[in-house]
Image 1 (cartoon, rainbow, N blue to C red):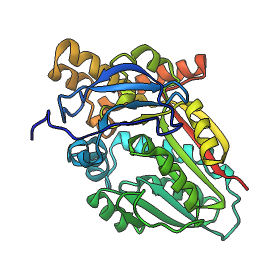
Image 2 (image 1 turned 60 degrees about the vertical axis):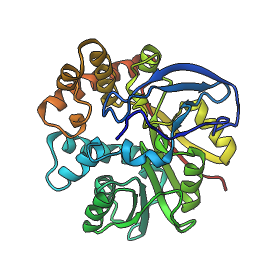
Image 3 (image 1 turned 135 degrees about the vertical axis):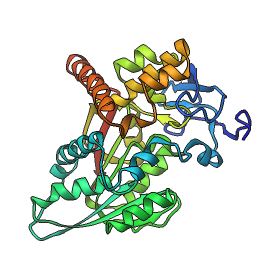
Image 4 (image 1 turned 60 degrees about the horizontal axis):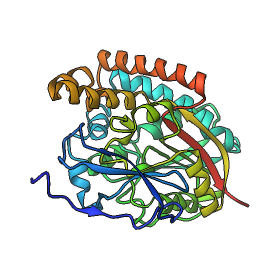
Length: 335
């Protein structure tokens, strides 16, 4: 495959607010998988503060960007039955997060049935986590997922989940059907994040909630490393990156109610940041050894130590500044 031959999509205006005024930030490259040698321009919208690639990869480049080596494919498939030490930690974190970010906004009734949709469900581990949380409430649950990977879809189906295979924006889903719709670090990967969020809202009930997790440029590490190395770029796979200001523009555009919105830590972004720095200074072998970009989220003890170190660092920064490199927001339709 010719790494320099690439299909592009050009943004005529900001997909969030339609503004044509943009500020050049930097150029970024794929230092994690080296899918292409091309450097991509990063811009910031002068109106809504959305940070985006322009031009970005066309959707026809999907297979190249998310090949069999992509970390989430391996994390899901290799450890779908026997979780690694790191994955067991993440499972516990997910359970805690769902209690705080979703469950408290739902009216739970004994022996009621909740329909839950995970957009970008992988092998269904996040659905399993939210199912565990709901056990203590004596609720029946119907678990649904949307997934692009055939292999991951099969694994998720084998667990008893109802899976919609394909592109979320294109497949037909029932309207006003789900009590909970959530999506973890997916919206930044899609061609139209506004359409994506609108569909999440359309599929949820009037009494339901939608929870989104995504990178956040309103953070200290973004400000320090934005000129080249910030791990949240995850170039060229993160196409549109938000901050609270951007989300509020989406709120006006789509007319939803924000129930809660808070920053939180993603320690793997720091690993990707230092992988980029060390690769520039010392080359691929050393950077891959000390800051493994692929296996970091499904590795063993070394991954745990590395992620724990950066997690503690960012929690200190979060406590001091009130900012972190990711954000979650829970929303619902307006009455």
